[in-house]
Structures are given as structure tokens and as C-alpha cells.
Amino acid sequence: MRRNPDGFTLLEVLVALAIMSVSAMALLMSARNEVASVGILEERTLGALVASNQLAEWQVQGMAPDSGSQDRDVSLGGRAWTVRSTFTATPAPSVRRVDVAVGLHSAFLDKFQPMMSVTGYIHLLPGGGGQVAAP
Image (cartoon, helix red, strand yellow):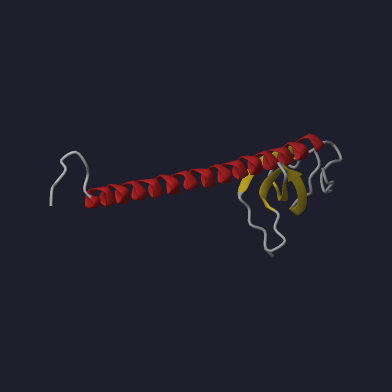
């Protein structure tokens, strides 16, 4: 049997092919993880916008109950969101604390699962306390 020094043996080609396939699989897994994290970041960013918008609406409106919570469904970015605003009285009679929690609306889940929340304070307008008006 004659050896040709100019080429690769079958074994060398198979080993190189195995190394290349393992490398390609690692690159594909890395790319898939990056795409998934971009989707999660997009949802968190939209959730933060929904929460900030709701808090701003409460602050502009200048009305809030003494305590309790209110749920509301909104749409942003092609997604349905559930917004829960929880009101707490403060030592100052004209100020209410509001915690706004936001989660994706799901028909399959029975309980609310927030993914983002913001806290703010509302200065009540004269005659604005003790009632809830949906923004």
C-alpha cells in the first residue's frame, strides 16, 4: 500500500469534522440563548413602560383611595398586560403611596404574576382622596 503525503487520511478528516460539528453546535446554542434574552429584555422594558405610564396617570389625575388595590388590563407593544395598583395611606393626609405591579396577561394562570413594579407617591388634589377613578 502506497502512502500519498499530499492528502489527509480518512481518520483525520473524521476527527476534524467532529470538532467542527461540536463547535457549530456550541455557536448555535449561544445564538439561541442570545435571542431568548433579547425577548426577555423586551418584555421587561415594555413592562417598565406600562408601570411608569400607570403611575404617571395616577399622579396626573391626583385621585386615589385611602387604601386598597385596583386591577386594570392594558395593551402595549402588541401584548396584553395586567396592572395592579396598590394604595397605602401615608402620614401626610394629602399624599398616598402607590405600588404599581405589571405582568403579562394570561388566560391560563389564575393568579397574578408581576414581572415589574414601580413605587411612587400621589399628591391628592382637593376633593381627590377616598375615591378610585380609573385613569
